[in-house]
Each structure stands twice: as C-alpha cells, then as structure tokens.
Length: 145
Image (cartoon, rainbow, N blue to C red; front, side, top):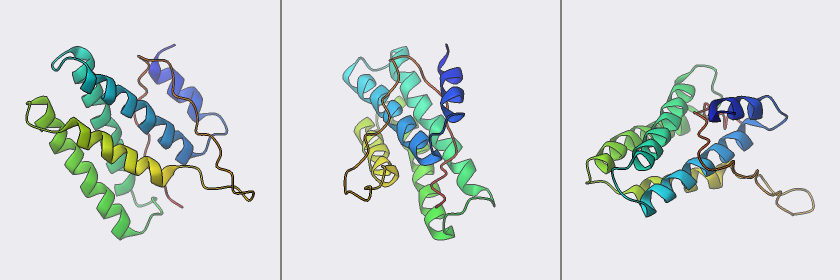
C-alpha cells in the first residue's frame, strides 16, 4: 500500500482532522530527523524536505480558503510561517538553511494540535507513526475550532 493510499484510508476513519494533522506532522518530523542524521543530498534527504514543503503548501491552501474557521489573524500568522518553511526548505536544499529549524516548527505546531486533556486529566496517546518509507501527502490545516 502506498503512502498516499494509507493516508487516504486514515482520513476515512473516525480520526479527527487535528489528529490526522498531528500524525502527519509527526511522520514528517521523523523523515526530517532521519534526513538530518543521514547524508545531505541523498534522495531520502531531498524527499523529506520536499514532503515537508508539500504538507505546508497544503496547510497554506486550507488556511487561505474562506471556509477555514480559524480567526483571520491566526490564519495569517500560520500562513506566514508556511511561507517561511518554503523559503527555509530552499535554503536547506542549497546547503545554507537549518533543517533543525524546520523540525522545531513542526514540533511547535504539533503541540498546538496535540489531543487536549480528558476530563480525568489524562492525555490520550497520539496515533502511532506509520512504517518508514510511507509518505502521505498533506491535509489542510483544519485546526478550525
């Protein structure tokens, strides 16, 4: 099963959009971390960076839509962050950027998407990351409320 098919299947389950986005960013962070720890310029390195950019491009598109329910100011801030991700990705590919900065941005957004504490105060465990090599492509950032 390809990463695209796995992601499509996951979207059709009862998982919330926030959980899907959290899981997707966790997968991308894993790929970026492996890329950082591997050799620059390899296909794994380039693929991880381009996958991250595609995810953020999808977030920008979703945040730009009239149907997105986030406050306009927050949407603009996240869009600005997404545009920075695109520029930083090019810098990393050129050997001048900081892949750790991209990883940190994703982790920060993941904190905002993380499941909220339950009534008992326990935090549900996030969904497990898929097998290495499966790379689903973006969802819209639907942290829309």
